[in-house]
Each structure stands twice: as C-alpha cells, then as structure tokens.
Amino acid sequence: YPSPGAPDLAKKVQEQLTSSGFKCALDKKRGLDHGSWVPLMLMYPEAKIPICQLSVQSNLDAAHHYKLGRALAPLKDQGVLIIGSGSSVHPSNDTPGAVFGVARWAAEFDEWLEKTLTRGRYEDAVDYKRKAPNWKLTHPW
Image (spheres, rainbow, N blue to C red):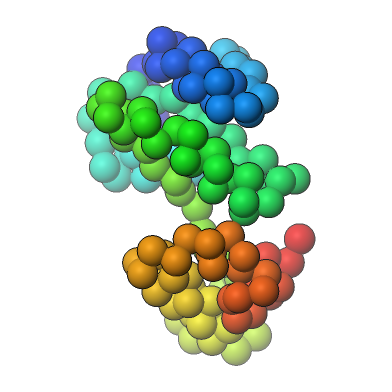
C-alpha cells in the first residue's frame, strides 16, 4: 500500500501521548502492518492518504489502550481520522463447533462486545475478563 507517510503527524501524536503521560518512540524504518494497510486499502484504494501507524502494546491491558485512545481523541478535532483495526476474537476455520468458520463461543463474545460498545458501556469492555462470555477462548494468550 504505497501511501505517503506523515512525519509531522507522527511528531504531533508523540507529543500528544507524551503530554498525557505515555512513553512513545518514533520508528522511521518500520513499514505498515497489515492491520493498517488492509482496511485503508478498502477505504482509500488510491493510497493518497497520509498515515501514521501506532502499535498495540500486547503486554499491556485493555485499560491502558482505552486510556491511550482517550489521549488521542483531541486529534479528531484537528481532522485526524483515528482507526482501530483487528479482530475481537482469534479463532480459526478449524475451530471445533465452527459454523461458516465462526464458533458459537466466538459469535457470543462478538455479540456481547458489539452490544457493550454500541450502548456506550466502555468500562465493561475494558473489564471484559469479568464481564464477557468466553473471553479466555477468544484471547488464549
């Protein structure tokens, strides 16, 4: 996906996160992850949108990432489109009990997450380990 980079935006994001108490380092050599370019390729096939990619910190919890999103939110008022991509579950097509590649437990978790988010119950989504059905199956790591 041959989109232009956004070094000025990357610096602005770094400043925003740092001022909000987050540690943030720039990596000018890393290319785009498929989690960035796949949705953007579908949204902007001409690839003329500048991109600044952030990495998920898999060693940190949902509360950390929620706070990170809140710290980035003011950038929306400056015309920045913020996209979070990825799957809410990680089953495979050979998951036992799968129908059309989706296991019942995965669908139940996904339905819970959708309802939770659309109802604005963000604190429940952050506390998914206590609130969500089947969370351990959907996030086995």
